[in-house]
Image (cartoon, rainbow, N blue to C red; front, side):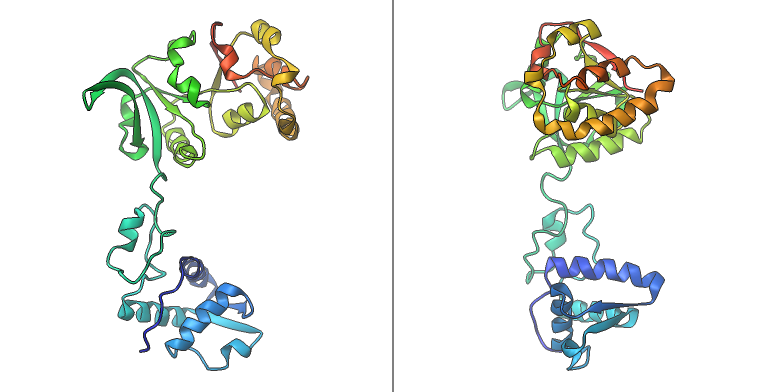
Length: 293
């Protein structure tokens, strides 16, 4: 068997998907001019697994038997196998045992499951009190909490005590929903919490994007000023032009929501007048939980 470079992470992922597809289809034809297909077939040529003229054909039919041979060759060469499941592993774990491979795209990224948590009471770390913890959400004892509160903006997250709402309830788990650093972990955490069936609240900008996140994220309520206060404080200047594209979706939501006679429909009418309110502008006013549906 000829020694060769391991297949790229993209090729491994492609083979993994093809393998699952072949479980039901048996065979599947692919065009040979495609980059990943050519990479896989070139690798197979080096291992004498396919005919010499394979790349001259317009299409090649992949079979389960060929993928079994590829898997066996990868085992013998001690290459990363396309049938290795990198889900739930760190990149270090995914690369362990395969010194020839530098597949940094395999396995979970370092921030895949990280969330930023705000504690109800400070704890001492390195001799200093802190109430903000970077944590893998899978290690959180979700059974100890009754409610989830997601905070949209990082500056507000660090200054929640300045807002008129009892955020420090020990039964409420407060987390920063995320930016480029925490967004992926926050999204995964949302889904995990929703599976518990416990209530979730969203505290963010009252603009089309913020409301859309709350609705699509499975939150039951938003933290907002009362309707009269919000009408007075909202302005066109705080309504981003780029958010107009979300209005049709919110209008559809309002139409579906009318049968519930929900107060939130009245809040939505403010957005439809191109007026919004940034989260930072909610400081110093009374806040309440407004049911979305």
